[in-house]
Image (tube, rainbow, N blue to C red):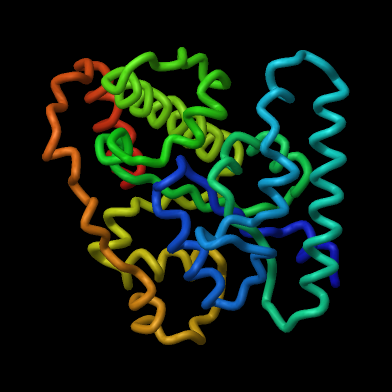
Length: 250
């Protein structure tokens, strides 16, 4: 395998529950090897190696070395498996990938990253709080003490995580990053999938209608309208609007 292909994984990340699962399903249909997966299309190996928030709280050079050592091991194992397949390339999906972007960009010079964003107001009312619980301290978010604070903290996490990821995409990755709005993917699947195909520089061999059929619009879209969003501050609501506008490229 040439070194360029080895160092060119396609990586999918986003706040948990954003719709990264369906983007991973599209990449699988396009012919990519995404590793050993769970039902959510998360790469189980990446999760086992990198579910380590303590690395970021203890200021030690050894932590950085541990991250890069794990990345090398992860890469070797993934590429060894890839070589046994007829897949066109490799990559992985795991929501917490966005947290490791600075390390990933250093380790994989040709990495391409797909960041999936779903409306933060819907996300605040999601039952998926895993990232907030495990990584909230990374973004200096205090532990919530009641249900209202849990929803407010969820939105804070969404805002801070996406701001950081978007800044890294724009300042560092640039054309090697693609932002996908989950709502746009649900409403205009063919258009958004064509963006993914173009981003990956693929010739279209899989019928677009087949790829579009992978996308299912969940009933939870716009669930925030069933709740009282006055619990959020004006600044939070403005931040959500700004992030969604930025994600659309406006």
